[in-house]
Image (tube, rainbow, N blue to C red; front, side):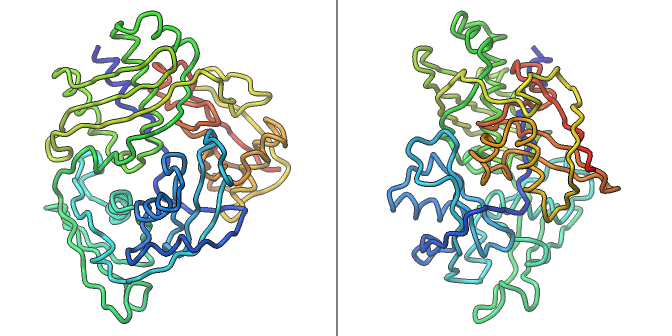
Length: 387
């Protein structure tokens, strides 16, 4: 059981929670004005909901500096009006004390003895639905208390007619609802053999533990703040298991289900409940491999592209890679959202890149290395060489 729990706690919470947003459509939208509130992710979603959108079917990606946002529909959303739409944002204030409203940021020992300013800012952005950068603000960290102070940079976007004062970020625990605010995660895709095993033996502890790991890949994708706290999740899951705090209910006829985890982790998560509502499908996603071939677990796939790429052309790399492996028609189908589905790390010598399909993707099939032992979906890496 301990081995199962260690694997379960990987959660596939590996997708980045920071980075540039690029969309091919440049469609301005007055939805960037959020009725007097600053356009954070949650406020933009609230505005979109007022306009009649089902916000469970979409995500909002802020560009660094928060001057624009991209609305990105889930690939399985029914009757979606568009795949992505870029909109300019209207700021009613540049006072960060009115923008940063969640000021608790628990320190996790796995973050290292020295807590980096960027890690603090990533956590603050994740909790507040913002996208401040270190070009916008200064972050000073007390390396004893792990409290922090965020101050706008002189001459930057967040000073002006309203002089924004410093924000104190306090090292104290938060709740699951703050860390995992998106409770409706929609359609999820489970390996057919795992789903069939659960339907045959839904009370089998080993099988529902594996299924929980598979579900948590999607929970982690929709709630990326938690990627900063992977170390804590082992404590959380062991606490939940030992206190019978995990509840998984699924209608095996239609796949509609709910996962609830009640637990705590000293200093990080107060006693609270993580909730995820979903609908399971076993429709296969595509493997990011030649002709959709299923890779062996923890394998490396070598691919050569006939161009060179850089950070400025990283989305071209994503598109060209999908087109080469899975065909241009499939690459075109999701052209505007590959930025969120494929993780790219360039090699220092600029000869190529290391590429991974995102765990928890609704388009591509891939798992985190540890989670793959449970989910029946392999972990694999593409070694891409530029020619």
